[in-house]
Amino acid sequence: MGKVAVRVAVVCGVAVAVTAAVVVHRKMKKSGKWEKAMEIVEEFEEKCATPISKLRQVADAMLVEMHAGLAAEGGSKLKMLISYVDNLPTGNEKGLFYALDLGGTNFRVLRLHLGGKGRGIVSKQFEEVSIPRSLMTGTSDALFDFIVAELAKFVAQEGMDFELRPGRQRELGFTFSFPVLQSSISSGTLVRWTKGFSIEETVGRDVVAELTKAMEKQGLNMRVSAFVNDPVGTLAGGRFTNNDVVAAVILGTGSNAAYVERAHAIPKWHGLPLKSGEMVINTEWGNFKSSHLPLTEYDHELDAETLHPGEQIYEKVTSGMYLGEIVRKVLRRMAEEAAFFGDTVPPKLKVPFILGTPIISAMHQDTCPDLKLVANRLKDILEISNTSLKMRKVIVELCNIVATRGARLSAAGILSILKKVGRDTMREGEKQRTVIAMDGGLYEHYTEYRNCLENTLNELLGKEVSETVVLELANDGSGIGAAILAACHSMYLETDE
Image (tube, rainbow, N blue to C red; front, side, top):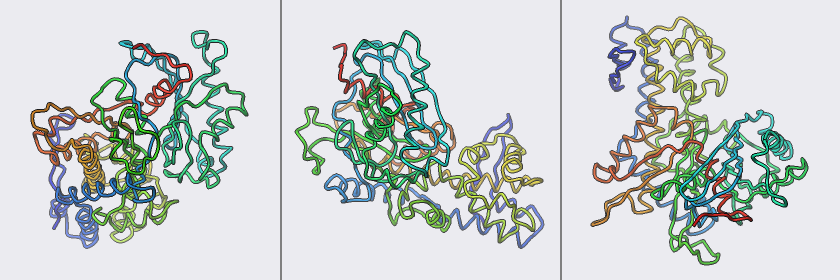
């Protein structure tokens, strides 16, 4: 019955076959309940299928939405937001700059010393802070006061090496990883919250003004020189060291992408002519929605339970915030309808988001023949003991199905950007190299996901083109890029020409 593929991996020095659920089934005593559980897995796998033909349909549908979003505000589910970044870093920037990177349940504060031409980043210091869940749905003042208090602590720890010249303010690049309608490089109003945040009073307000108000309240002498989204920051950070970077993709708690667009291809731009002839576009591709996306009943159920039903559909099947929850929902159904874990449904399995994506990543990548790590995670997180090896193999396969779908759909998104900038084909007589800066914990730490994405993109592009396209990990890219953009737009501009 099952179509679950046999995969062989060399793990713990042993070749271990992760067998199909159907093989497990044949080796065990016939059981109606086991059969029912395997039916649920097989049906889920079929509905998550992403053959290359479907991925091309997804990429083409996203490309259509990109054109529509560039034509007019509100013309597409893809916002295609103008970033006001039309001069990207050259590598010659110098001075001391800061960044605040607010991207999800954590935020980072960074300090960057840029050395000018040929010296790059001389030094970097950072701290990461978790945001209490209560602040994610509280008040605007409470959230920004908390963030600025942590930023002020970071600055207060500085020694004499970081003293500013008299009369100068510290300058900050602010990465804000939520949909914003910008009106300049240092201002923008919040369109809506995503990734578990829901503070309605902030929607429609200038986010930089909210942060500045909190800084003034706490006496922090700092100004926002550049206000960017995380893929825009990552793109800038990538371009600082590599002129071949044309786009950036974030795959972490959420999912988004930015790329460099030609000015004449942005009909909705009504500002002054751009000296560079280019503008960085923040796609907000997480909100992409199409009939070509392979959605299941578990995805529809998850969507209905989120703070923003009907929004961020592409993000909900590709990003780190949701992959573990989809696995949990399938396991819960198997427990309820097929007694997969015994006669009673484990209480912890009923807790939403208890299976974070780091947990399913660890289980999926368990390299021991007896899948001991899977057993330990089930016991520690879900309080499920005494699982058999065949049960653990099925759970690993569920993780594989969810991660594979997410990774392959992410590859389709990257293909749509490459199509938009004309890098999906070879240009005759021209040597081209296309670099996409990648950032986010999902891409960095979930090896199976990353490998699947890269293999799928190679398959979509074909051998010749895929050899010219490089996905490059940009660690802390969005924060570093924001600090560098603060340098590009500094009041006290210093560069080595």
